Length: 452
Image 1 (tube, rainbow, N blue to C red):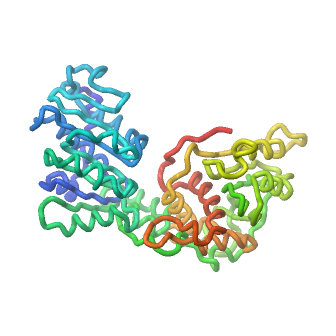
Image 2 (image 1 turned 60 degrees about the vertical axis):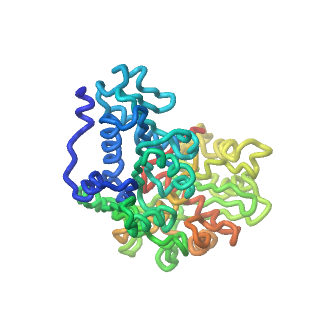
Image 3 (image 1 turned 135 degrees about the vertical axis):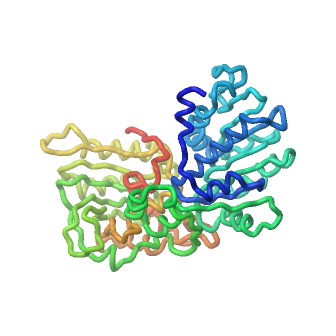
């Protein structure tokens, strides 16, 4: 092996449940384990070890997948390439054996390693698969396993590792139940918490950053029922009991969700807490105001309202919000909603300005929205982390934002927000959630930033 390959195969700390997973004779191994607890790393080592060893078939196929092609590439591709010794490559020539165009690697024994996303499962259909890993399977479409992956494993008694973090009581939960109840020997179930792998200080950091429910799901691999209120951490008597002052010297945060009915914007600042509630963190997100135009709104009207209220703001103004830009709203006439925000607000809040001592204007918009569940977890964690600290307060005058936090629910029998039963809800919490997830994410940012 080269020195780089040897470095990549660094030693792992002994872990009994990981060893049981590695040695299991079962074809289908279901692995809901804690975040950053080594499940993906173990799958890479297992898959590569199998692929470079002796094969029953001259065209064996080993596949690493994730919900999207971008995720699969980010999780697996560079690591898998570094794990393969030069002698194992077909022809011992990386330039021809490793194909960046389709994320595939040809090996000396005829086997192939492929990295692919399951957003288009047809990419890997059509031939038999000897072994596959599906990472973050709880985020894949429910039909991916039964309709696309399982048939590909039938021809050669192919094996599968089905790994991830729980995502409520969805198809992954059902799969986990099946694995635990199976008496045929086809399925095995393996789980462990992050605390069995990560240093105690990392667990305490996570406990301080995440709400209790998200901490249990992400770090303790617990399947939690997602029915009921979406923002279960919100309590009016705790989060909306204090008047919050606007500070003209602090940056002003504008949170957009583009709609015609209602037109909304949540306005907040990161402030130092000066109250007497010991549960509130020393620095917190202060929702100081809201814009609510119940009908016949557009982005121009919302921006004019912002200018009327805060046109003389003395510090920076930063806008966050829906990356799609509201395609069904103002965008049809005057460009995207973000173009309108930029056009209307930069002359007021941006540099240069006619008066000295003013801040600047910036739009911080990802190239795509976070998954709904990721955004919800970030908002709940900001409301109250697992260590009991509150990181977000709402001025009692923001009545519609409070109603959103209290009233938004899941669609019955799903882990998706119900946007139909109460169409005037969800917009303000969505808007605020884009900001919170951007600046205080519970996971690493899965997006690039669009500059305006």
